Length: 118
Length: 118
DNA sequence: GGCTTATATAAATGATCGTTTATATCAAGA
DNA sequence: TCTTGATATAAACGATCATTTATATAAGCC
Image (cartoon, rainbow over all chains, first blue to last red; front, side, top):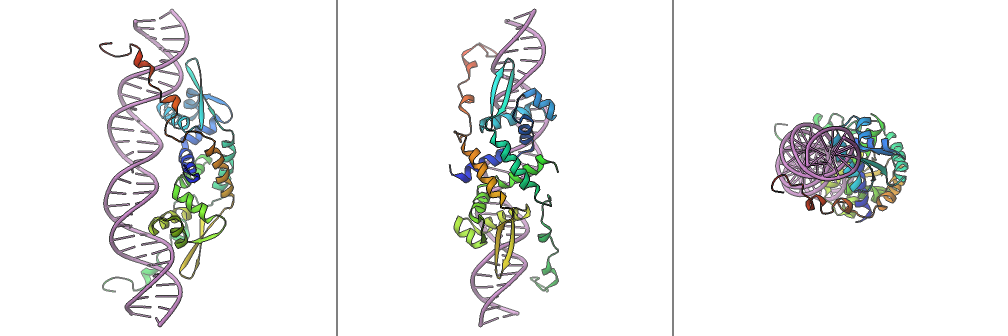
């Protein structure tokens, strides 16, 4: 697996709000599933689903304690990476779908580019 | 837009091999569309499609020079973030879809958990 | 104005992914 | 072994997305 594919895999994993919220909530601590469910206001199966993805992709690892399962970040550097990425994400002004520069009314409408009847 | 959504947007943008290859190829330089097409071996419409996304999401910006359009990174920090992210992505051993710990033959098959006829 | 090269857009398609609903496993206690 | 609380899995659905194919715009040259 080359670098680009490794990065793709990581970024696809991180490209979901709920997974990001989970990671942020866990931080450098350990959190049980029910804590996450309550804190984030998501359904328990949904949280379990995302935790499974984060676990399979080795972002988190687990520790069982009685009936509870505690999730923890596997690599503390991830929080640094998120911080740096947030700087970049915040440096963009328009969060919309289209840069104004490319959403202008088409100039060619004012010229004779019509196929027929022009 | 909160931080988590900003990050989601950025990571979704970066969560594609071809876009990552484009970014890596551009690096700190300026590259025209045809240069990218040739270097990456992708179709021209595909490259244009990804460039549009990277442009609309303010990862790249453009400069026209005659018939050529040159693309350039908008924020140099992005390369640093990619470097740090690659460290994290490379620190995971198995790049497969499933952690062995959770792919084991189910224990409950050896016990009497069957609904009927057990 | 036509012709050529460079780049962008649109429609169509197949695949992937997040969420919900329903159900199953797991540990603990009586 | 039954019950209860905690967590995991599965099926189904809708939505999003990457890619291809086909076509349109833009600039430069004659």
